[in-house]
Image 1 (cartoon, rainbow, N blue to C red):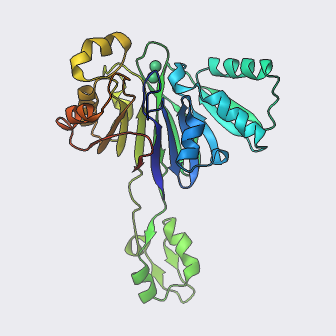
Image 2: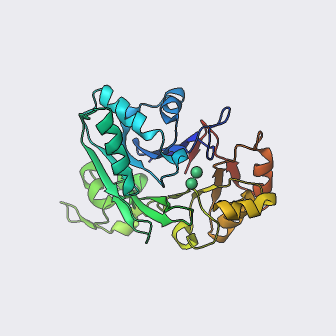
Length: 303
Ligand SMILES: [Zn+2]
Ligand SMILES: [Zn+2]
């Protein structure tokens, strides 16, 4: 199953040349989920060849503009393009009020259902589930209420060992039962034990999106054992004091977080506009956690 994330924006606070505010597009089994929607997200979708009409679910971490100023534009375009299927938005409770005000004064009555689910930044919980994926909140420590999100694959069916089944001439119609873990009794009386003909499916993969936060460890339990961890790294560690004041994280702290929580791979982003080149941030993180990459615009990472 495809499980990958494309970075649409990696900048904190303001756009800079070639860097947009936060937005990521998650593709899970060819279903598309937008995570945050900074200004310019529509242009980034076009630039990297994605259709906005394919997005059905949007998660917004918090109400600082660099994480949602692109949302009203995106929703308006969906309306103008004749969308009729629902869009589901998960975000801070006040987000709906903001959107309604914008629609009210532009006298826009959107043609598609907008289904909004307010999310609380008090306790982590499961906010979304379908047959592919389960999404939970991460309670982050920022200047205003802020949640990250974990995206965890659902457990897959068992895998059949085709060579063994072919050797026994087991008809194809029995394969779905075997995938569900059932022992078989065939019409000729033979009994096949499931464990002899199937193997367990791959371990479900987990992606965590940690947007703006003070790196205080309070949320580490929720992001434990990620296959891929995205963590903000707004500053170099020489600006730790600034990071603490503004409730942000340094590249070094993001790397330490990856180690402490057992991540396999770390993506860093949300870079301060003061950095013209991102190499120093990468180097700082790599010294602590080798498997670190920059979450820059247009990069796609398999989870
Ligand atoms: Zn931000
Ligand atoms: Zn913020």
